[in-house]
Image 1 (cartoon, rainbow, N blue to C red):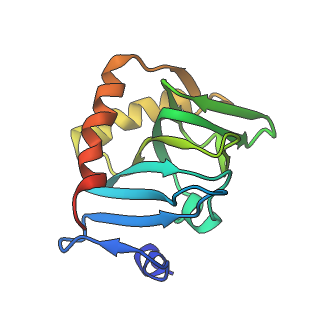
Image 2 (cartoon, one colour):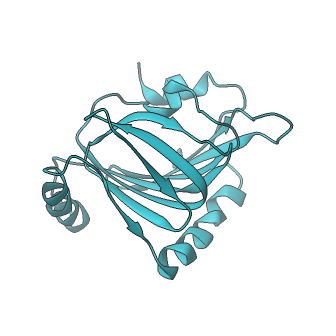
Length: 174
């Protein structure tokens, strides 16, 4: 099934007129407002997820909308904690202020122990290296794919500022 058609069935789903921004409400935990997943398609097959989770889990069809693919994921955690299971069976986590590069080491199973997670995820499908960004992403992917764990470290101020700038898309009308 086409991902867009799958998302259209979600109550509250909205899409911008140019189909470049999707907004998907996420379930809320106890006594909290619902979360929001805002997906922006800047072009070249790349997408950016702005994540505001307010529960311990998210539905599988949102966690893994396209199934097994070869892609580089760059995640930044602005608040909260995300725990994920690795293909090796181990678990790892991403906390506020950290960045992760995942070349497929993590399974698409996520748990948010504090019931909160905010951040962004840039997803770059591998294979087509016709653009400079995808060509560079392929190099990073190749360097990361041999590790059994995602590369995680403190992100520093520049990504915090970048995350704050991305909030424009959460506030914009779809």
